[in-house]
Length: 457
Image 1 (cartoon, rainbow, N blue to C red):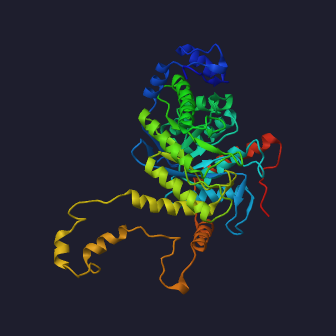
Image 2: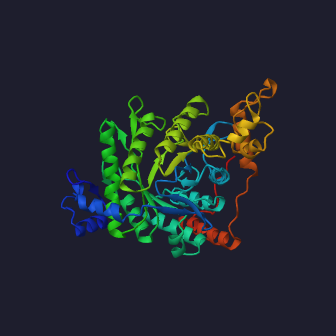
Image 3: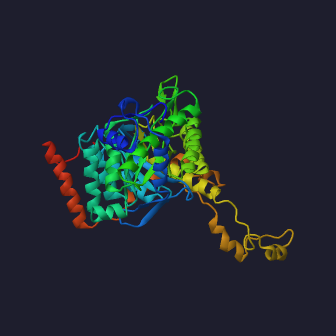
């Protein structure tokens, strides 16, 4: 940042940097002194609490609470659990994914993106957010078209929270901002971060670096650029409003040289996110990572391997907020079945991460002595007290009777469809829903089109 410089396309960011002592004589290579970076790291909160839609504490990000996994809704395509075939995503699918997230115990938050094919492009980002709010109580991060649209999203969530100050005090909305690699802070991305700073809302800043394409083909070189992109934007945000909650992030991966695509299933992605997590925690900042996605376009062995591997590495390396559960096929398709599978896997991995407690209760020497060699513990009260702590699968079959055994794929499909057809999230108050729907009607009126969604045939 001092030697190479960073491109800034936002005039307000340039003004803030200039007033603080940075060299902005060339906006294409703004030179940021190290003391400004160090100052920004000091003023950024080291712990961030995210809340439910109802204002209850949901997630604490402080580098010690472990990974919190989130799914993603609003991709262009949807892997239908009834046909197991990909198709366009519809608003009803974003409703299903939001409810699924609310139902699953190991999915802690939701990330909305923008599906244009069956929703008007100008309002698609807000439509997906609205459905997430109506059908899910957990914290929601948003991908927005531009800063004007993000401002409307803040207003929408303020209605639910009871006002803008209440949303600031107990945020369930998280902003997102993505630099462009290598080291370009685009106008839209920077303006979104500055709006988060103005409103005092949490925001994660992450680029999507491709080793060998937008960064050097070495992992250390990729990490340097990734860190510089997040830190240079952090400087501007803290200059705007010291103490603004920021989640440091990055998705440093590789470009598959055969296909020229970013690989979500590559082991290098988990490796570099783990290394970036070390940097983030060295700075004392919460980390935003990724796991639970796959390059596969269908359910099967590749999906299972890539999802399990990345989720395990996320837990082991300690990223605080982890997104992309449900993504398939180069992040163009979402899958409810993959989400349910990942929820199961995360539960299994958390059982491992709990470790082994050692004390007088867990090593009952008196009981062991009383039962003695050759005895058994099946009928003991100690067993009754502790066996319920064993992890119990819901989609992995342990049956010993061949004729009753079921394939994991069938159990997964049954569980997914059951949740989609029977789960009902906690509703918002009727007057709040009416107000939200009124705002939604205004979006369609502004476009001059009828207030209705394209329905799936």
